[in-house]
Length: 236
Image 1 (cartoon, rainbow, N blue to C red):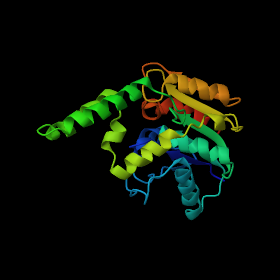
Image 2 (image 1 turned 60 degrees about the vertical axis):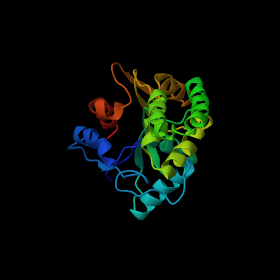
Image 3 (image 1 turned 180 degrees about the vertical axis):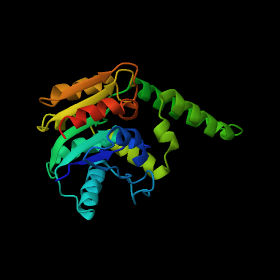
C-alpha cells in the first residue's frame, strides 16, 4: 500500500504552497494530497465564520469523499498546522506521522495588539469627524501594517471573522495528547509563529524532534523543502 502524505496549507495559501515539497519528493512511491482549504485557492468561503473544529471537520469529510482510508502522513504549515494538531488530538484519522511546519495554535497575549486596538478605537472616533472620513481607509491600512496584520487586512469580511475565531483558540492543552511520531520544522527568524512556539510544542509533544533553520522565516515549508523531504523520506 502506497503511503499518503496529506499537506494542509497556511492562511492565505493554496495547494501551490507545496510545489517545492512535491518537487523535492518527486520519484518517491508516495501519494501527495494538497487540497485547497475553504476560503482559499479554488475553494469558496464557508457559509459562515469557521473555527478550527470546522476546518478539521471539513478535512475529515474531504478524505471520506475521496475514499482516502490509508494511514496518513499529515503535514501542516501555519494555519494548516493548527488544523493538523486538532485532527491528531481527535484521534479519528489513521495518522502515523505528524509534520508541523511553523505551526500556529499557541495563543499569545500581545501588548502590541492591545495598544493597536486602543489606537484603532481612538482613531475611529477622530476619523469620524466631518472632513476626516476619507482618511479612514488609509489610516486602517497603516495600522494593519504597523501590527503586521496583513492576513486580516486582505481577507473578506467573513474570513476576517473566521481568522478571529481560529486565532482565539489556544491549542496548547492538546499538545500533550499527541503520541504519534512528530517532527517540527521552524525558521529561527520567523516573526509570525516565533521559534519559541516551536520549542513549546517540542517540549509538550513527547518524543518529538525539532528541526530549526537559521536565516529562515515563516516560509520554512517552501524554503527548506529539501530538508523536510529528506526527513519524510526516512520513513518511506
